[in-house]
Image (cartoon, rainbow, N blue to C red):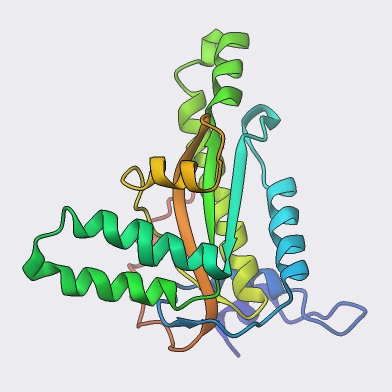
Length: 217
């Protein structure tokens, strides 16, 4: 019996599925860098999953400041093979670019990319409406984005896709906004290339959880 079953049991829902799927999904979400272009789920299902996550992920004062751009097919390829790769080519030393190009090619090998934004107009509106919390709204916006990233990442894994989280912003921000007509108020936070897994994740080491959690009874 695994640790998860020891802690949470192994009860079943009426349809026979485990009630512990949520915990299993958290554990299964990993950084997958080996990804391919095989269609694992339909684009309609992919859109449904992402829209569901955006709708139900919490945000400070229910601000709903998260914005998402999903790039598939040639749009996905352009992000990594043209915009990001060529932007980095201009700043990475030539003798080090081979490794950088390999990473870009790996992302481009995937099926698509989720780009995460936060709408700064929403944040500024809250700052004006609630000036007492003005300094906190940008921080809370980042917290909300992090939760959304986790939800979508875990949902993609649950659907049989592999993904990783990347941060090539702000280097590519202007080109992304121009290419895909992204509103000026959307601030790019992170990029998540995904596709069918072609290689397993690496080993993951864990620090003792007892040293990371303080529990007072």
